[in-house]
Image (cartoon, rainbow over all chains, first blue to last red):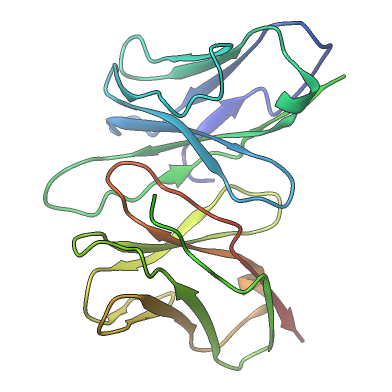
Length: 116
Length: 108
């Protein structure tokens, strides 16, 4: 257990439905990252936050994907109008960004999404 | 994006050293090289990182070529718990690009 939790662990939905995933980072970590991982591939970077600011979102896969971190603590990733191609593992990671120490990312267990 | 090339898979006998290579010929001079691994059904975990000189920690050693176009992760005595996918990741700022990694099988 890394201290990063994700909820739910599994989600099955029908095509066209909206889904929302939650990530709770390690409490003192100021950075939070979202990745997507499909079978046989490494994690694919989607977006990241520093505190509540979303500093990079150009890698979000389409405008159906959005993420928030409203108070700089937990984050949500929403996928609207899901498609079968969205089926994947969605991973969250957090880190403590300082200029004097290594910015190690700690990953959660992931949320596995299946779109029928 | 800096690209990496790693063998798709490698095997090692238990308690023997393992050398996992990575080519990252497009890396810039200030990019750190990170190694993470992903055990089955888990999220990735940090292994080691370095910039120019060789690095050691309790998990592994990292040997970085003088021209920085390649690096080698060294597990000194492979155990069954080291069976995982190992990712070599050049640090291009704040984004990690994992690639497909090397799947390590440890044979008892």
